[in-house]
Length: 191
Image (cartoon, rainbow, N blue to C red; front, side, top):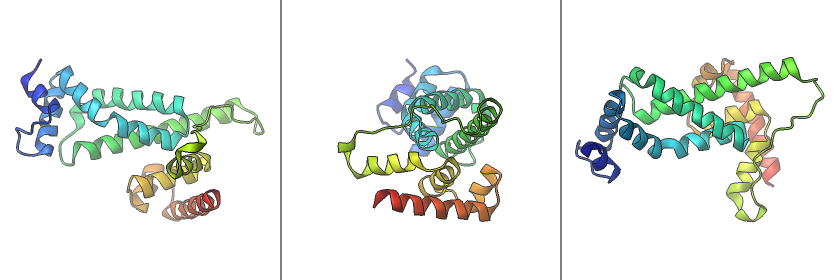
């Protein structure tokens, strides 16, 4: 086992800062060190999955999307230039991949399903007894796709309206309208 990776797995920060430690792991993974990549994966897969689940509102699709994101991370690790934190780069890569998946799914659905055919995908269904957080997650899952995407990117992931507009290829006004719609529907669902 690589001693540097072992050190990072144990929480040691020999590089002087968590950012330096993260960069060292990225550098090792770029060089083909699978242990370093596995450490990055273990540190960040939970956040990747949470983002995917919120955006897709489907457990199976979120699992597939999470795998796709991490395959893409492996393929594009060389493109990480270190101008931002690895987590920022990972978040952008994940959001872009998830938005591409949504677009692809919509195109396929338009081609293959009649307009009145109900969507048969399993939706995220949390047990009733787990409290307000799961009520919010359920309410998010029930939002229309556009409103859910805008709300998650802006309110949960912290993107500015302009950034959401750029990422989704929509106008800033549309983003704001979808955010307003999402807030109103969430308020209604949670009261």
